[in-house]
Amino acid sequence: MRGNATRDGLVFSHRDTPPPIVAAKLVSRSAREEFEDQTLSGGATRARGAGHRAIEEQPDALRTCFERDRDRILHSNAFRRLAGKTQVFIFPADHQRTRLTHALEVAQVATAVARATGLNVALTEAMALGHDCGHGPGGHASEEAFDQFIPGGYHHAVWGADVVLKPLNLCYETLDGIRNHSWSRPTPATPEGVVVSWADRCAYSAHDLEDAINAGIVTVDDLPRSITTVLGTTRSSQLRSLISALVSSVTSTGLVGMDAQHAEALADLRSFNYEQVYNRPESLEQGQAVIAVLKALVEKFSEAPHLLPDFDPDEESLTKAVTYVAGMTDRFAFETAVRLLDWPPARLPPGIETYSLRH
Image (cartoon, rainbow, N blue to C red; front, side, top):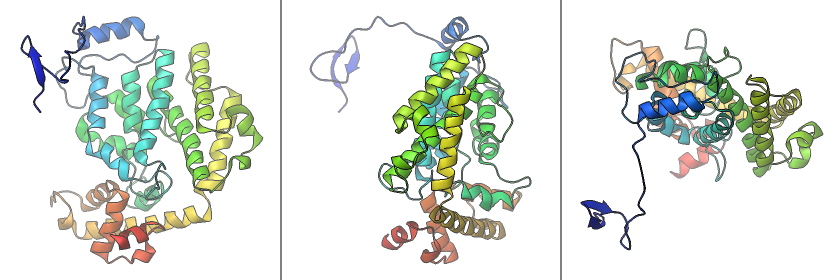
């Protein structure tokens, strides 16, 4: 269908009646930049023209520099591949999180805080959507697999900003927030970046617990009272409490942090997940299986770089191999190991081997 009845030279989407008339005006990039100046909190990051980029660009007519960053991340291959990468459970069952749905939930938490405190929502959303694009297949175990191949070790936050998303020519502020979202990294340069670092921890602590409960690994009754009395027992109540705590702290002190009571409850929730979910024997076994597969793939591609897409004999083969393997989805990595390395399906992470044999 090419559309429906026309009027004044316009084509309409629906057949019955023309769309409502809107007294619309063009809200240009420069107009939104002026609006930000008038409405954002003091200290919030303002968009300016094309933004601070490694390669200079012309400003967009309609979008601020951070809105362009958000859109570039959203439409990137790296972001889409997060749908096939492990959050906690490899090859997740229905309703369990992937790395993609985790990023979306981080974005929801972070933008809720940013809106309520007058920070730059577009910058916050861009950082949150892109913060995990440096993760390899198979969850955090991939970092251990790649560590020995990268001088100084492999860190998904640094890799995401400096390697995976580098071709997008994102703004300095966006890349800084992605590079430093992990608490082991330096403090981000913007308040929006610090909000994302908190949102990441709040989101995964709550939703990983929910997934573990739904999988029958733990129950609500297992939760210590130090968590439930402050945050409640559901993901919804936990995130509501944590978001409110962040907003209250920011608006009352001008600093992005959390009061001691909520921060301790969050720390207890995260510790509970580590003890009962992430470090349970089945999870550690899964991680060792991931590490073995990924290390073998990197070694294969570094020894035979002609097998890599866009092979360039002038490029350093080991780094190129890590880049390629780290970008793989879980399924593609494990299927490649079986096909290219004759990897025994029984040595794949639990759950994957049955899928691979069926297909």
